Length: 213
Image 1 (cartoon, rainbow, N blue to C red):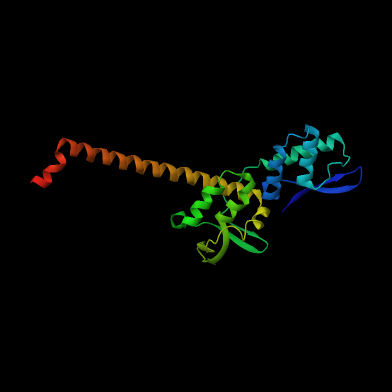
Image 2: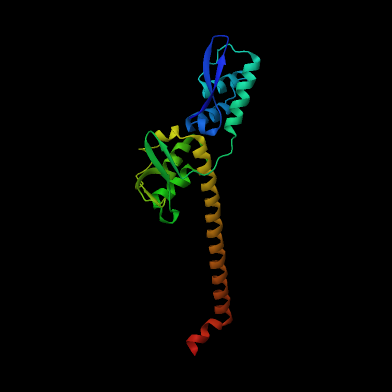
């Protein structure tokens, strides 16, 4: 990760600021969202803890107002950096790949994807389903990932996933989910229409003609 160095000249302390979402981990983001939900802190205390989450600087650190504003602005910029879909990434020398074919997901994968979608607190579990270690890869970029065995093995490790990977995957997955939902609804509407036509045909006696003939 490449981060911007920043000096707190009051105590000659060197800290690093995230340049973009690539420099922010999923765990940091989860802590940040949890912080935003707290009602026992005033704005100043919230901002101090926000700085701590993304820089490691303690809440009681004595920094100038100008430096504080600059740090907060940079953190906000990093959090809101647009991200592209990244199907493969490496973490702790392990190469992880996004589910290559949703048509072949298991019932367990499907149920867990539904279970963990939409909850930031358990987002690391969702990422552990979407990304798994690559077991085979060819020169054309095709790959296979480890068989799904639940989220217990990789969920905690996925808390260290860079947020650019997380955001890109979520954008892709949610769009795919929307398309799949529309496709399923369309199929249901067609099936209901077909059943209605069949029902009307039977009521009118048209459906009996092949039998009587």
